[in-house]
Length: 411
Image 1: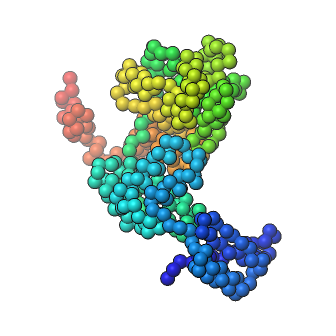
Image 2 (image 1 turned 90 degrees about the vertical axis):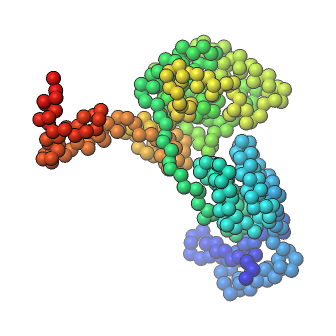
Image 3 (image 1 turned 180 degrees about the horizontal axis):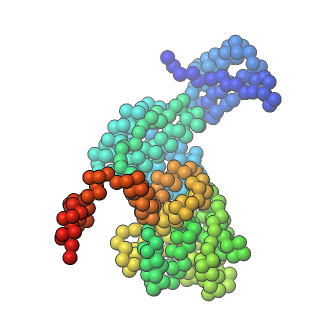
């Protein structure tokens, strides 16, 4: 049975006491139309729907189908600059991989079987489950947009499940590690104010790009806050947009505020950016004049050798494994451990849902583990089991001994 090209929709009146019926269809150019029939007679409306259906079948046909390669280009063109350049490349790469597996077929003939085959091919090729899951999310988004644009009735990939994989451990620095990192940053020779930058990440939980694109206008010394806000492409600043487009205001501590005041006193008059050295800022401004600076650079090229320098700081602090983003995870974990609500942590983190905060950012702090261990000894107050009372554990060997035997062995 062919799918309906024209559907009936109901539109209630403003006061909710009555409704009118509408025709909902997509023309030959892929444009969606919703035309009010001006009445609520379903019998009459069905006749009008069938008439429009015949018109479309006889010549005003449904949107032209496209090969996956054309569908990809068309979708990205329609999306425009609503996504980042790097995200666009990821989406395009995922669809190219998908096309290499299932062929450059008509996008309307794609099925869940194609996606399942693609999932297995990726795993066989050595892609990690997390990478495959990300690719599947990109593909699903392509087809979901096609549904929203009236090109498809349903998303053929909506029920495709990501490959199973154990949840990775969230890395957060301990308090002792944080002290060592700050000390190593203070001793690190660089025009970049690494100690201030790391301290700000620990306190505010801001992302790397958010910190590097922060200007002095975002800092409110009187209220001890810093705002995460987008930047316009003007003489003093380059264009930068916030991830998920969420503006937010974050608290500063007394110590961090004092550090910022001292840092600003040492900056040239009119220098706009907080963490970008004046020499680097002048170089970027020259690149902008030459047309050699893109939006993507506002995320990836603000500072040279960022990852290498931070890794050197970690090694100087005696920490072998870690990333700058772990500072954000550390901050968010500390917020929750200090008693802040899940909702407040989510809002300050700039996440759309707490599930994101919980899955990718919150680590179990050592003090929480210690408190749980302490709580687990409640049975002592109730009276220990007799067979446990007479036994103790040699921690090194893990063996049980009778208390009397242990007393005999002790000096």
